Length: 299
Image 1 (cartoon, one colour):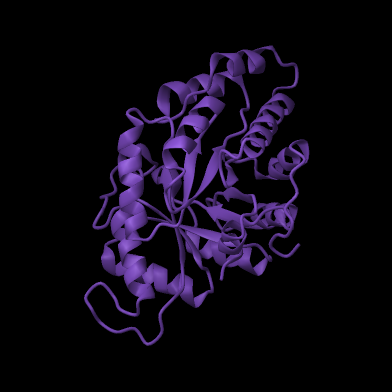
Image 2: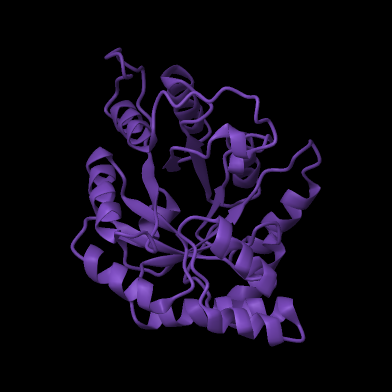
């Protein structure tokens, strides 16, 4: 059983963080951030060509992080692979002992650094969940027997700020039926949004990790509000960032306050911190939030 699954199923407050693979073969910064997170998180989610930008693969990065003593969460999108490659990637994860998989449809290639690339989308998020579930049952999607089945703890994403929210709940139910056991949310900044979301999802058979994005500036907040679907940074937080002398410190403080309130009100089963290129700040955010896992990877 994966550590993340054990923590969530035992009712512990889970802590995960996001890490992007390097764009190049220098992994020194990756290893440095891994050491900083060791003993502080229950899992590290590795992005899969996030925003359709070419990088080192999620699978290779997960293997490195596992060697560093962390619990990796493999991201797998349907954008770049057909069902043969998708199943091969999942089996490869099984060979490496990587059990946590976050299944995504993936951003279109036109938004990335290779806009001329042809997207695949043979399988969407639900299709990948179904493929992984089939593999765990000992067969591939064509019905062929496997000589040994992998074991996965499957997850997917959800957007609490989506309107109408009921559509997201319908999609969640479909993903749960396909095999999802945990969900990571898009970044949330409004506590009332999570109160409403928790009420609507409290009877679903899944665990929820609330997405936390530390703000770096008021400009960043305004940009996300305008350009990132499902993000809503309240005006009061934008004003706090605008008036703060130390923007980095204020962004960390806001993130920590949100984590504390989410935990105190039991509005989620854990948090997923997306530091967006500043992974070294994750331990600082956890310290500010007075959040220490009872046990974590290689603690």
